[in-house]
Length: 301
Image (cartoon, rainbow, N blue to C red; front, side, top):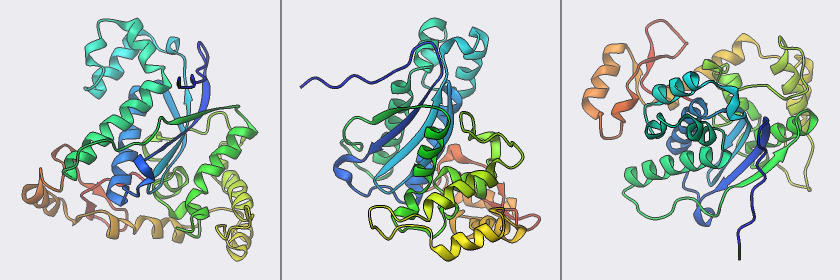
């Protein structure tokens, strides 16, 4: 049976909701794997002509909500700058700007590289061979505005619906987790296309929408934001106080792999570099809970 052709908008920006699952629906993705997948998504979103609106990496699948921009958006010089900054998969095309432009504006190519690079990493780390991902990824063309907002909320509420967390921002492998816990460091995520016009209160307005939707019971299932949590969020105006922000930063002490001074971090690289620590991941990142305290791994969510 012939495969169904994908809807790909040509010559103009378009929004897509992407879903991809592991082979057989196996729960292959633990915290380390989820973090790696998020970092790969971030890498290729800088290379491709893609703006990430939202994401959520679960134990056996991931969601992506993206805006794919037309290839004409960038000049040849800007395209080559992206390729050189990445230093990887598209180097062979630097002498063919038109083909390069076409590839970098293709949603299928974007997802293919994300999945391919991750599966190779996973198989190498786990001494495994064979397929990691199941069937072709699913893509849905989404209209900007209310439909895009509803889709983003659906994605960010996945961990709540699965009863993994009580509040959506507690799940660090999601876009709401990144916006709250990491304060959208490096501007990884975009609000573009969403019907939220107050740029100074965008996160507050989105959390209000998210909690109102997350508090609803879906198909009789238990997975929802508890009424008392919604009530407290309403009372505080859906903002986050200093205590909330500090509490989310403290997660580094359980998720950062190695915590300490810069010297201690360097010692860890010397001891474990190339084994459980990837040599390319070198860096000491401030934890934010006190001066001179660093994490070996920059947490992505």
